[in-house]
Each structure stands twice: as C-alpha cells, then as structure tokens.
Length: 119
Image (cartoon, rainbow, N blue to C red):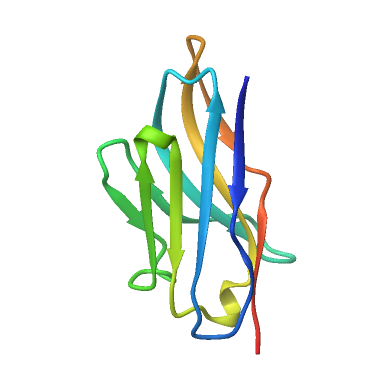
C-alpha cells in the first residue's frame, strides 16, 4: 500500500507565494520521477514541473522562473515553491510519483489541493 498526502495551497493575492508539499508513505522501495500537475476548471490536467531521482528538473514554460520543484529523498517528499503567482495559476494541483513498490512500478497521484490566486 502506498499513499500520497498533499499539504499547502489556499488563497493568495497576485504576486504572492505558496508552497506545496507531497509525501509518500507505505511499502516503497524507490521513487523515480516526482512531479506536479494542475487542472483548472474546464481544462485538461497539465504538467507543471518534474524532478528526477538525480535532481534534473523540467518546467512548463508558463511557470519557468517563478516556480521551483525540489525533493527530499529521505522523507519521500516533493515540494513546489510558487512565487510571483498570477490569477492564471489558479487550479487544483496534484502531485505524481513513479514508485517501485513490492516489485511493481506504478504511478501514484495525490488527492489534489486548491490554489486560488485572486485579489
């Protein structure tokens, strides 16, 4: 059994900052890629940022220079620091892990957390 639990999020004014966290627990042998996705109302889920087990990162063009993804392998946790937030960043954010557990590699999703950017 593997579980991902997200924290953070909420309402912030334009230009503000938020930090999201996502921690995995359970029968985990290893975690390869960790990532963040988001889904705004009426749109498809889109990639925000990824980080590999080696620390290589990849960002959507819309968040480059404003968002930073990082991971703590000892805690099986990924973070998303979001700065200079814009109203168009409003969405439900989901973490996504590729986890090797009990001999099986699977993709797991967090429960989602709402981020709202509004004045």
